[in-house]
Amino acid sequence: MPWDLKSDRPIYPQLIEQIELMIFSGTYPPGSKLPSVRDMAQDAAVNPNTMQRALARLEEDGLINTHRTSGRSITEDVNMIKNSKSKLVEEQIREFLEKMQKMGFDQNEILMSITSMVEGAKQ
Amino acid sequence: MPWDLKSDRPIYPQLIEQIELMIFSGTYPPGSKLPSVRDMAQDAAVNPNTMQRALARLEEDGLINTHRTSGRSITEDVNMIKNSKSKLVEEQIREFLEKMQKMGFDQNEILMSITSMVEGAKQ
DNA sequence: ATAATTGTATTAAGTACTTAATACAATTAT
DNA sequence: ATAATTGTATTAAGTACTTAATACAATTAT
Image (tube, rainbow over all chains, first blue to last red; front, side, top):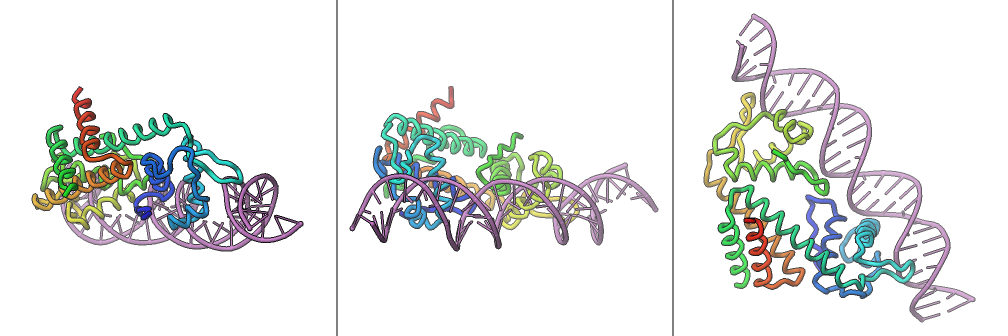
């Protein structure tokens, strides 16, 4: 994985987001085991402490469970995952719409812009 | 203006973005004068140094001009503004699409999601 | 039994960001 | 003429984040 991390934002929230994306896409299916903190840190090219921080947050949120010495796993609560996913999707859309509206685009213009870029992505 | 600043990102890039949105929407029209650094800082409830940093960056980018003792103004180069606006729009859409695709949505699902939220926003 | 692996904790250092308090020269406003 | 305003610069302090180097107990693997 590329783990595309940008420099205009602290790393750990970016790690949280990327891991969430992998959970929501099924890359890490419900109940599956996660790599160790150290392995994930190395994979993302960050310090283990930073990855630990991201994982601790994900556990607080209930998306993953920690088993003291046998590693971590994704929650088996499929509804929990589905809800978090919907929440993230809505937040992304909301933020996007807000910016577009602040720039003066109306609903039609917004839909046309994004439609044309989706079409363009099909190539 | 609310100047909605979030805490998961440094302030100055957020200031840059918000000011850009105001330029692109015409709140600050081409050639118009900007409030002083101190005034803008107070309005955004940040330190003048931080606002200065954001404005300096906007000047580097060519969106605003600085007149040593008579303040700053928006560039009169309308094409410059238009290009920056398009660039920001495309970047927003690109980032959004990337996240949606990473979550496993296909093009139809993405369009349907955003269409329903745009419709919902009409209320 | 022994070694390796797990999450976790701690201490130290460096960096980037933000605020605060000033100060200055040049211009503008009165 | 004088005061106020402009962008700019500097110094100091505090905070959050990140990395690095270790260490530990508990479990798992060999």
